Length: 309
Ligand code: CP
Ligand code: NVA
Image (cartoon, rainbow, N blue to C red):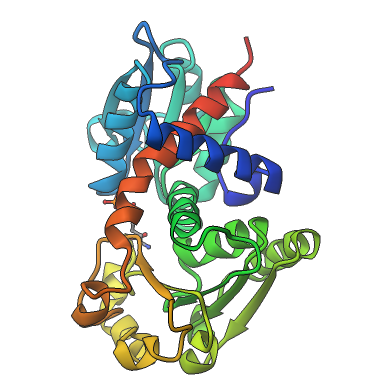
């Protein structure tokens, strides 16, 4: 049966580990897999801006022997004249997989329901599962394991990154803490799904309003922009509201002495993180950015192996 990655809990703990193991192998041996040789085409569609996702998918698809077709929605019929399901029916005749960065999760679900090729969420308002595969690969490289580690996400708890940490971290058996103002907590349904997954994996999900309490003893400290794409009109309110959740050296000093700092980028230095932390010795952001390539290649290989004939 064709599989999709629309949210982080579309894959089981064993499947997540399998994809991360494959990513590590492909990082070591970059051209080991060529499932797209021909070349077959993968459509990579953007409703929002991107640097890392665009480049890492384009390079990764080429590494796998395929041809990336980068589409800006502004120059296509999708989002204007044509529905996701009609687009899906057309694309499945022409490409081997669809990667889509969009706003609502419902569009991704409609796209996946309407097609026989794998659909990958390249960031929606609700989740950023490709980033989480890269983050988990990076944490595993630096810490040697995932299960049992404590990861604290600070800032916009209702964001795609926070919600993906809840699901993907729980899937990996991590203790996920989210520190945010009460106005910006993860959706209750996402926390409930994270709790359910964590019960099986030995992880946990906890919400905090106090940043210091949430960071105490953490192995991994993560933040993201306070103004996600699509929220630009709320910038003044967000900057005023998230002030207590900025990561600086004082806050980092409360984490474990060997804690690492992560940020999916792009970053606003001086807002969600100080320059001395993001550019300092505990920061592993460049490994994290590179690992988008290896993680997404592994994901594509894994999904293409499961595609309907
Ligand atoms: N982290 C991330 O998804 O970056 P881009 O917006 O540049 O793709
Ligand atoms: N939360 C951010 C992530 C950017 C990669 C956004 O959605 O803009």
